[in-house]
Image (cartoon, rainbow, N blue to C red; front, side, top):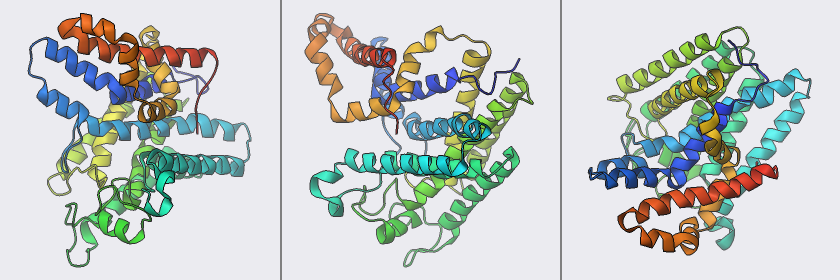
Length: 367
């Protein structure tokens, strides 16, 4: 059985939605559930809700790269399908460039950059990094015709970043010193990145991190190309993705003693570990949702996934938790020890209702 190249990937919206739900409240909901069983949940809380200080990998460290990966999966479906319909390539490049600029501006706005002026603002941002990585991954996908050629680009990016981080010396520090103070990411950001740095000596969404992040978006685009292929059966696609995901994770773990997994300076091993995990998640969601067509349970996730940018901005600018308590707090107080669980669940449900209304009215916030 094959899924048509023009058929919408329900798994893509569902996976994006799961990512957003974990970010805005799903992690707290899971922790609350575990705590009610009497099981110690501190370790789970840390891995779900906190980034690793420097070296290592938590589930929370996957949220951002998974979103970038999913945006990459969409490239063959949105961009290549238009090319096949003879939409001029330059028009698509311009549209993608505008998207990047809008996301960079939204990122500055998100960081409060227009309050005090750009000279004192943090220019680097999560949204900006998504836009930049998507733009360059799109260019690579548009100007290559085979999965093999895209893999060559991917290997070149990961190897290039690795060489820069491990072998180019930082003045006064040396080469390959992957600490906040010694990493070449920070040296580049302090000299070339305008505006305020997030952590003073480096920025986790800085210049070299942006270049490296193209890699995981391109991993998504390559995965999308595999799924969109009409030459392979669904099971062969799933086999390719599963092997690729396991191989990517294996390489990352083998290299990690010599080239650590560090999200904050976006090492290539972090790309491989986060990307490989994302590939396996995509394969599982694709198998269940698009191949077996078990879709009913996915609708709330898809609501979040189809309006992910709106959800991201909403939870930043509005205290959704406080709003939820203003509306339903009286119920939570009457539930005793189950009150916190109710608050977490009702907060997500309240936004789900809003997203359902937007879905019915065909209102989607997209850059």
